Each structure stands twice: as structure tokens, then as C-alpha cells.
Image 1 (cartoon, rainbow, N blue to C red):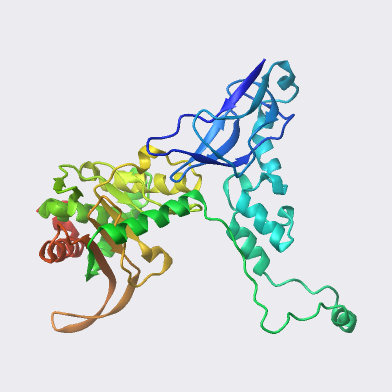
Image 2 (cartoon, rainbow, N blue to C red):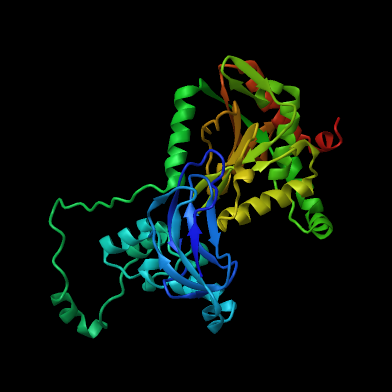
Length: 400
């Protein structure tokens, strides 16, 4: 019996999806629950599993096509023919499919064709070993090995291709992914619909660093997770939001909505772009809970396993450009939120403490805010509260 493979119900606010890649070819045997294909939306990657053992009879919609909920993607012939392959074969089929160009995303296939490269020669860093555009570009940029030994250098030189004509410049045109297009849309929305300003400060992280160094081994042994800086920043941010509630508010028409809860968006870099999963009720979480949740967000972002629920809502955001070496930046608001904290790199530099020049681990902080509802006073004092909590973490952790 033939079973239609349909686009599942899409998350709220998502009207369509793009077929990213099929993991099987027509005629392949598949087992129940095996992931047949990936669908890319502007927020998350969705898997479409097989609902029965069988054979993939037909693929009706190829990679790169835009589809909507309920559209038929292909046909699955349910029956005993699938028993010819063990269930484990379904898992092995996904990497096998990526060995050819047909298993890659449309952007990757186009780039491979433009550069005249074979997917089999490149190691993929994406899900299931699939190639990303960055993988292909990095491979193309590598210096090519010499075609012969030094003794044959003259011969090799004679066969070398003619130099590129003077003034010739190469170009590559790669379509935006859905998530990149959505990020661009959101950034323009923030720029055009808010009165965004940024205030800066710096924080001495000596006390936090010493606390981490003193208890990191005990903490990891007790909780099974490393004690990082982010949990301290989350706790300090919550203290600032409690003290200045307008930083945790949002604009709805002519109303200001004050949120009585603290759902913090934590910006995470993924293969598909920047995503902001939500750390819900952050005021009720221990340092260990915060570290575990953030670690889970990062792992699932890399595996494209974040859900719409993970990314929905949020009353305030934190982004950490310091992991990439940023010294200072101006973070952009994440509407409808009205403020965002930017963390940066930690650098040992001389500062004056008690009239003496000392070396301390310093970080620049940035707080961007919507000036329509947040005055400079609240923004400056809110950022100062974060600074003070981090410079005296014992007082913060004891709720003093």
C-alpha cells in the first residue's frame, strides 16, 4: 500500500518550508521512524520520519523546492520488501547519501558546480556529514599540492595554466538560506521600528574568576557540568531586571507590557546562523541549571534540534561576542524585546584600584535599549547593577 509522505503541520507563524535534502533515494528500503528528509524553515530544521517500514517509491519534490503544510513530498510503499535491509541500514543511508552532490543543499550543489568540485573530495561539517557552503569555500581556498617533484619542476611549469587576465575578478552568487533571510528581516525591523541606543561600561571579573578557579572542580563533580561565566551574567542580569523592570518590558502599540517573569534569550551560533533559544524563568534557576541549559542549547543548535518552543518568547537577551574575540560591539535589539546585553572578550589590562595600578581581567559591556520606553537613566543604572553584581558575586549569590 502506498503512503503519501506529507509536509507536517508547520509551527505557528511559519507559512512555508524549503526541502533541504532527502536522506534516501527512490527505491531505497527504509524503516519506521527513519528520517526521510529535512525541511528548513526560517527558524528551525524539521525532520520528516517514515511512518512505516517500506520502500521509498517516489520523490515528488526535490531539494530546494518551497512547500507548505500538507503538500505531498513523495510516496512510501509499505510492505515486506523493506525487510531485505536491517533497521540499522536506515541510519547508515544518510551519510551515504551525502557522498554525492545529490545529498547536498541547493546552495552547496550550485557552489560545487561553479567551482567544478566534487563533494566526495571534501569533508563535511554539517549534520550527518553533509557539506556546508563554508566547507566548500574553505576547500577551494586551500593551496593546491604541486603536481610533480622538484626534479620535474620545469615540465610542470610549462604545463601551468595561463595567469588570470589583468583586472579579472571572480564572483560567487549564493542564495540566502531561509534563516539568514529571516535574520536580515529581523535586523531591519529592529533598526527601523525602534529608537535604539547603546550604553557602555566595563567590569572587573577578578572576583568571579577567583570564585570559579576555587570551586570549578567541586562544582563539576557535584553537578556534572563546568562552571562558566555565563551563569554569573545571567544571575546578574536578573538582578538588574528586577531593579529596573522597564528593561524587561516590551512595546505593544501604545502600551508598555511589563513582564513579571524573566525569560532570557541566549544567543547561540549555529551552522545555519545565529539563533536565540529562551532560558525560561531564569530567576528560579541555580547556576548549575543555567550552565546545563546553555550547554544543551549549544549542542542542539549544532545538531539542528532546536524547536519552535525553544525559540519562542523571551523578555530580554544576552549575546556574547567575546567567544569570537570581540573587544566591543553594539548589539541589536531582538524585537519585541526592549533591551539586550552584549558581552565581549576578557582581557588582562592595567586599571587603577585604590590609587594603585593593577592588572585585572576586564570586559567591556554594552546594553542596547529602545529609547521609546527606556530612558538613559534606567539603561545606565541597569548596566551598572550588572557590573556591581559581577564585581561582588558573593553579595549577589547571597541575595544581599
